[in-house]
Image (cartoon, rainbow, N blue to C red; front, top):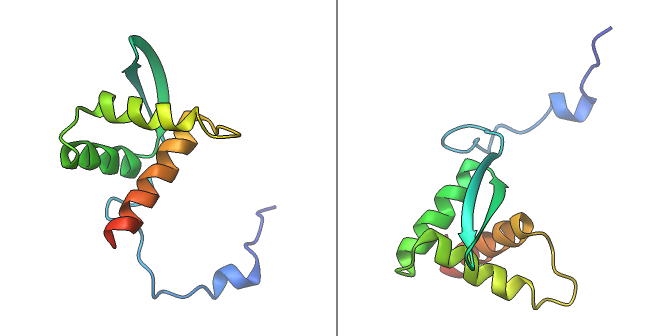
Length: 98
């Protein structure tokens, strides 16, 4: 028996749009931070935003991720790296007013 969506989902507003490339699941990449490789899983939209931010800061992507990681580990309750990257990207976009 198929599960029906909640009634509110059927009445959703069409005044918003999906992301330009649609909804895409996360992609795993290997990044070198402080001389060691680590795997990070992010949605392509976040990878693109990080790459653009790295260019904007005139840094290689690995260097930007390493700087964000260094900030992350100083937090009182550090989140995982993927969460820190998503949070940083959103804060960067909001600060630019995009």
